[in-house]
Length: 142
Length: 309
Image 1 (cartoon, each protein chain N blue to C red):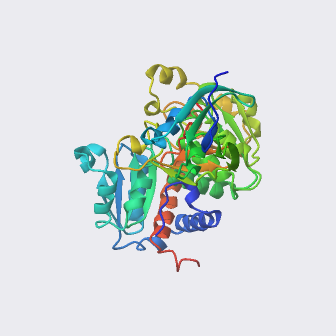
Image 2 (image 1 turned 180 degrees about the vertical axis):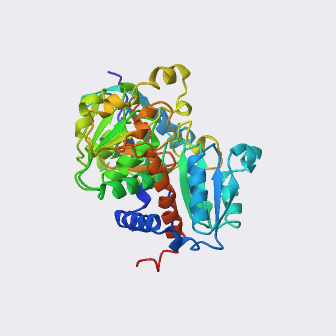
Image 3 (image 1 turned 60 degrees about the horizontal axis):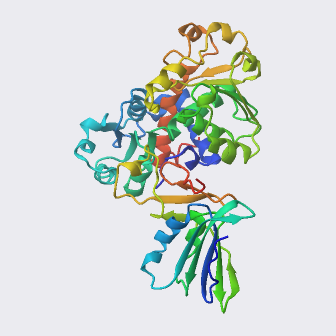
């Protein structure tokens, strides 16, 4: 088991679907932060077999709810003085705009570059999002 | 201002109102012959269509209105690269209402976001075709007297067939409706329709590969064409296009009051010998399409306020 030292103060984004960490890393622009960031790929998970984890040293002042749309079972833990002080329950946003791209070649967004790529939450229980134009599902499980 | 982009943009109450108006128009067309005088319908057809475009144009003319538009992207400013948003903003100043067909899914929704006139989706790729659904519902209601308690067979291309998807979504809002899906495995309904629509709402349905055994169960048989333009692969198209052909022999298994519907155009999925069977109502269905569109145009233009009697 890979050992990464525990955080004193910071944020742990856990239970990211395997391979999903870099999408979240890029969305949160973690490369711009002047602090330690650890990405753990394919960590063992008793629930799902494998998962990705991101550990960020220091506070993170962004709307984290959008992460739920990117990776449905993801959890966020806030760490202070080495202890989990908050387990953040993500509320799936009703719509997400320009976070994912619709990949349906038949969608109007494939030819009209100025259109926003907007997805609507189709099912709260399963976290399925669909393009508002063509209803193509955003595949956040692949 | 209301647009009709998806069949579900109309509530059951609105649908009932429009269908009732369409039935009145069918019974007494002269009464409505001047209703839209001075109004213009723009038909923005970015891909070829005979039936739907002419049906819209006939509908507006039957109401005394006028029609302008184009019938392919090549003959429109789209060929110069104009966006749907810009086109509709301009057309909004030329016409009172517009019907749009576009090969890309969602184009009419984009148009509705920028239009200052009502937009009717006249078919967007393999996605929605609400006025075909309205036509189907009017046909069923007129010939079966009710939209409740029906077992509907859907046959052919159920994967890419937008008319089938729209019909399923519209019919599940009525009581005790069951579906029998008859298609090759490759052309079964999309998973999301099965899980997010049918299963979620507890609708009774079954999926089979053979037509004859289920024919006696059906109140309606909705046939569809296997459309070449929906396939990326020519080999798949050729292999599947003749999979389910309805002929006089298969019609012998059907009940005497079963109706055969088809959105048309038909290629070879219904043998021409079936045309003489009184249960084959697909040409009647095309006729109902004009009245369905007349009622919808009247409703969206707000001209049906004093037509209740």
